[in-house]
Length: 185
Image 1 (spheres, rainbow, N blue to C red):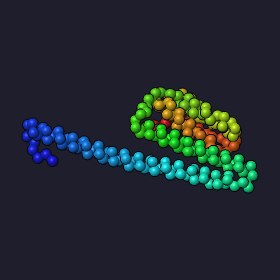
Image 2 (cartoon, one colour):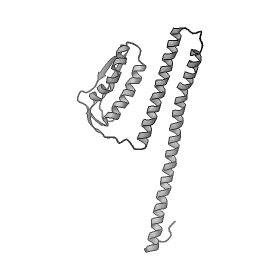
Image 3 (spheres, helix red, strand yellow):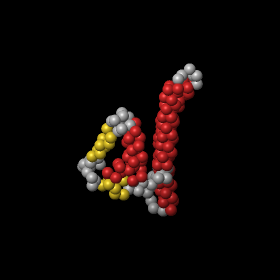
Image 4 (tube, one colour):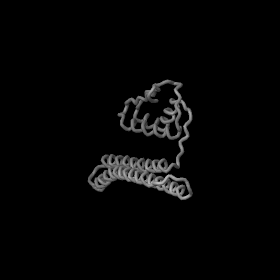
């Protein structure tokens, strides 16, 4: 605490020390908060990794049984592959979150047609959607422009559309609608 307010070298030094002390306390509090957040994220990801790993152990135990027929083996191998894809996605997401958290990635927003973002996000998913005979219903203002970081936004939409594809039955429809209103885009 500073009780004196007289000017002079000593009081100026006290004032500077006080400011540095306050700044260090704030940085310490922020650091503790960030550490707790990181612990929470790592705990969540650890839990999400354990689920497919447990499933894979069960599948491997079933596959170790010589009495199961080849159709059942193919089904189990397919399930195992899906779990491996899930783990790969989780690890990739963890690495991306780490890069975002450490400010390695710098967002570079620029004006882009909303329709173009969705079309580019659909591109890597077209063949799997054709195999499941799924159709896309796209609606929105053809000329709508949004200001976003193109690469990261496309990646986010690829993840969303991939989830829709995986949870839509064969011959199903996936509807994507975009709009601009006073509250959000």
